[in-house]
Length: 102
Image (cartoon, rainbow, N blue to C red; front, side, top):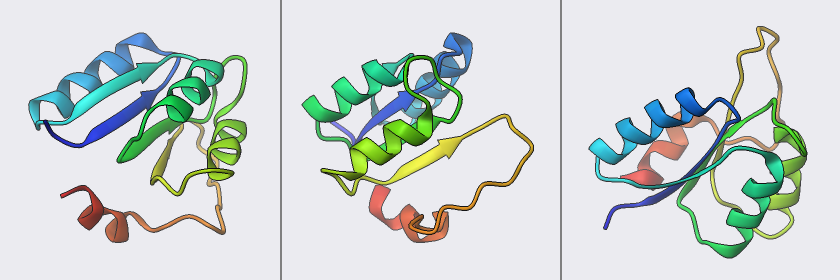
C-alpha cells in the first residue's frame, strides 16, 4: 500500500476530489471534516502527510496544526481559499517536502 495521507476540509466536494486524485496516484487517504475529527485521526494513526484546511468547524486549521506539532513532525500543507498570505516561521518549503513523499 502507498503512503498514507490525511485530508481535512469541511467542504465534502473538495475532499472527494482530492481523495480521488491521491488514490489514483496510489496513496492511501483518510478524511476528516472538522478539527476535532482531524485531531482524533492524527493522534490514532501515522500519516506521511496532512492536507489541512485553515477554516474548519470545532477547531480551526491553525489550532489543529499547533496541537499536532506537540507530538509529531509530519509534513502539513495548509489549504485556504483566503487571499491573504500567511507566514509560518516553522514551515518547510514544498520543494523540500516533495522528496519525503516519493
